[in-house]
Image (cartoon, rainbow, N blue to C red):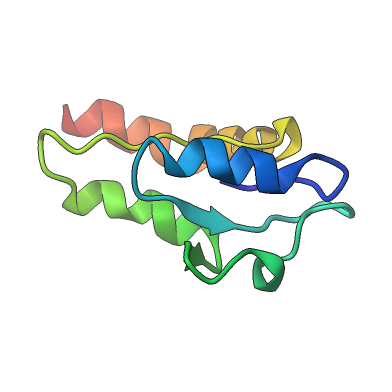
Length: 92
C-alpha cells in the first residue's frame, strides 16, 4: 500500500488491515506519504521493487494485492511493464 498525504490514510489502513497482512511503502511523488509516518504495526517495504521480487518465492496459494494511490499504481504499472511482465510470460 502506498498513498499520498492528501487522502484519509488512517481510515484506509483500518479497512485494509481487516483483509490480511499489510505492507506499506512510499514512492517517488511529491505528496507521497513518507514510509516513516506509517504506524509501526505494519510491515514496511523501503522500495516497492523489493516487494515485487517476493513473487519469485510465493507459494501457489499466496495472493498479493497492490493498492493505494493512483499515482502509486501508475508507478508500479510502469515498472511492471518494463521489468516484470515479460519474465512472467516467459516462465508460465
